[in-house]
Image 1 (cartoon, rainbow, N blue to C red):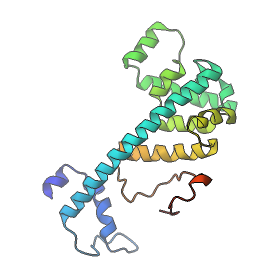
Image 2: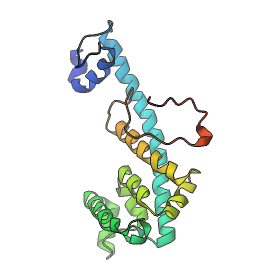
Image 3: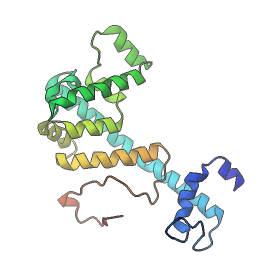
Amino acid sequence: AEHFLRYHNYYQISGYVYYFEKKGPTRTHQLARPIAFSDVISLVHFDQELRFIFFKLTTEIEIALRCSVAYRLSQAYGPFCFEKKDIFHTPELTEPFREILEKALATHAKEPFVAHFTRTYQEPIPPAWVMVKLLTLGNISWLYSQLRTDLQKSIAGDFSVDHFILISWLKALTELRNTCAHHMRLWNKVFVNYPKIRKADKTFPIIQGQ
């Protein structure tokens, strides 16, 4: 136990133990039934494997999404479409998004492909297919939610879903992906963002609130 806790954050481990404790107005720190520390370790390892599985799957979706956003927007507005106010349903969002672009560019300034662009070209912001590699999934999700409806639909068409469905999916996907990437507890996690369910999928045994 001492060796395990030396290399695993106690606060994070206590999150697993909590579900086996007696419940009260405040945390009791008393077990409802006896469990071995090895059971806790097994649960931590299970959750680790669960995160690995989901991270792999969300990565594939994330890469496809970045590709679709870059392709559809540059197809409609050219390589520097991210700086066009016409892509947003509210033109005032152009400036806040430019700040996001500049921050991402500064963060990755030493990346060889970014440094090459800066040395070679005069444009301050690289083309969309470069920038989608630098933005976070949260940035991409936010961008998609703020696009004009016709652009949302063209991207959603690549995934065979309605655009308003995809907005909710991307918010949920971002939360799931970040949970996995930052090694946070996935087992028994209560998510803030719920994905909308298509009518065609209503037959899935999804229980609301779980």
